[in-house]
Amino acid sequence: FCPPMAAYFGVDIPPDSPRMFASLLPPDEAKANALEQISQRPLIKESGATVHFIDDRLETLKNAAARPSLSNIKLYLANWGYNTKSEREEAANMKNVRVIGLPQFSELLRFGLVMNVDDGCEPTEEEKGYGNPSRVSDEE
Image (cartoon, rainbow, N blue to C red):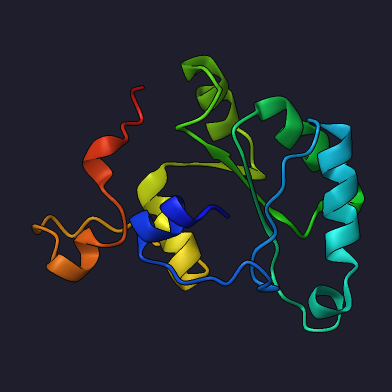
């Protein structure tokens, strides 16, 4: 997790935190293997914690979704990454993958869940700190 991104979202997560695992791994198979290893760590396995995996490649998420051993991991396709509109539409139709934008990513970081609630009101100053919804569009 890089410091500029943490500053953008106003999230203070130390690099050695067990809450965040970020790494550049080769796609697909290696990431699924890494997820299996992470899900077996005592911190995860013994506590029943939920693992959230966010990637910008649909093929990587399909690979993870196909493994029964990863069925308890929440999978998300980042709509700001290297994917196309048709891939985002395909992911939206998958039962075990959710497409998220930067505002939902911010919610996940801050609260551990994606609320994605629009009450029709203008955002408060605090809500504005959770990410800038105007920077991301599902139409991109």
